[in-house]
Length: 231
View 1: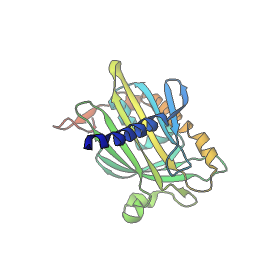
View 2 (view 1 turned 45 degrees about the vertical axis):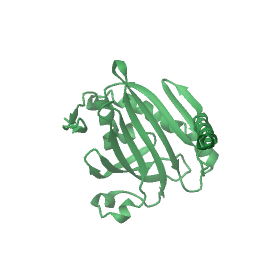
View 3 (view 1 turned 90 degrees about the vertical axis):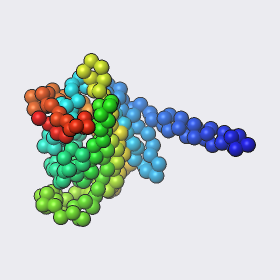
View 4 (view 1 turned 135 degrees about the vertical axis):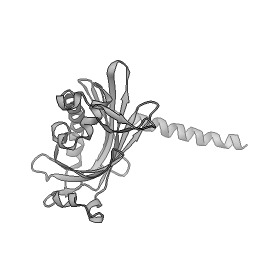
């Protein structure tokens, strides 16, 4: 009888799982980049995911991704980036301004980035979550240099990047994210512009890894096979 009682529960879990997968709707498929959107529970702003396969080493891609100063060159709408705190490659707190189209006010965000590595598969994942009050609760000199006045603070933002090595020298870069832009912005306009963020960001990453600064980057490893930095 107990086994029979579990059947409806299992069916419900399966339906929920299938519904979650089906929720994603392809919004763009161009130049090797796919972007999909789905509704987010308790939010009027959609969640996005983007995917691309880049012909480059994992070393080059991660080196470009972690180079704070290069953010405006590839990350869509990124300006005035700054490294607020860093615990080697494992954990970082970053700041940047998001350049919104006129007449909207620009936003700024403080993000905690946590690197998770799988030495067996060589896959790397960087979790990102907004930490809006970080500078209020941490007396960092770097916090004194960032601009916040006349900008809208982003308080809710969460997502992740995943880097997976493929055959023939390719790396799959997958990005899933949801952000509440705050302020008085038309929700329909924000959702309309969401496709541009992953599309131009992933395309920008594909371009910048080819530059001299990153194309020859090499990881350094510890005894456990985890990346500790660059040569």
